[in-house]
Image (cartoon, rainbow, N blue to C red; front, side, top):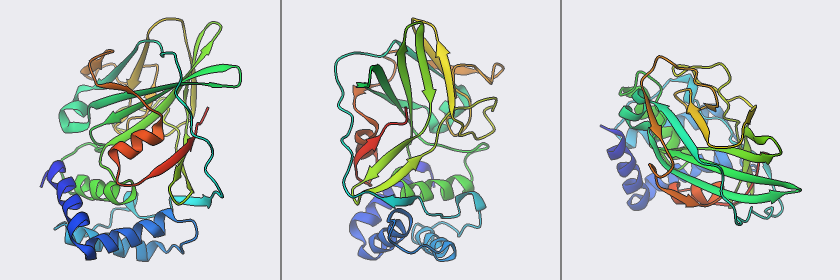
Length: 272
């Protein structure tokens, strides 16, 4: 079973099998509804039932053990960012070739320019085909992709960073943000800086960098697509995506999520 058939089978069952849909929805409520009681053992049991219906053996992998993803409910959504005039500087994304060849390559780039106080902020969202931990291709990939379909409503990996215009160039923020679900649960998205980590390591670090005026090169440094302005994998063959090499559109992160995910978000709280 490959990644694409798994996603299609999940979507087929969710759309046509009321029992499967009910199981997934109950598990999602446990994970994403702040008012729903959460029990890790029950959640893992339910996820293994989802796996069984997908024809996948049960998991004991601790790194995908279900856990609560939303802890706070809002009374009303904050106003979402409104994309205005202006474009970020030209951005080149450099990714390890192995990551691209395994189906995790850059699929699309979305940008949204807005003002925050006196600053001009360029929100940049990258969409990758998948997020596979090397070595990929085994049962761990299937477990992880199935988990992403339940908890995120998608297999694609989505990452957002910010470019803030400064007097001497740009401040680049590999930070987190909050997404607001349709039930007004506040979902925290971790930061995406890579720090010193390399491709075979995961990373979710808050990182602030300075970039001089002109084009910016952003390196995908880890398998879970943590980013930085420094190449942490100088010996690995690379694939470079220059402006125009991947589809580009204007949209804030929450709208990108709604394009790629079964879940529905109504707003976001930028992390700058």
